[in-house]
Image: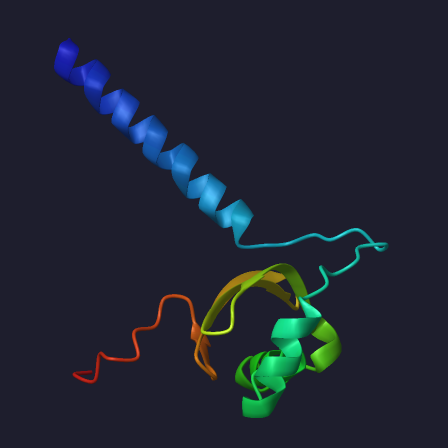
Length: 115
């Protein structure tokens, strides 16, 4: 009986987690949503290397084959050397990171060349 209850708890918790991740991958923003404002000092410094928020917006639009209007920033956390960005791209939530002046998906490893 213990094994059966343990198995039921594991299955139910797994199903609940799977539903949460599916729900989190979509982003429904209100019509009056305002994007967070980036730090002007950091942005002016990043402008030297073409690594500003607008450059990231263009990068995401090209990578996901959509217009720049479809890219909406949800969260911006950045410093001069790196940054993390949560974005909504055509209704789908995604995460990007910046290392220096290079943008990439949050799950990508730039040092993994054995693919």
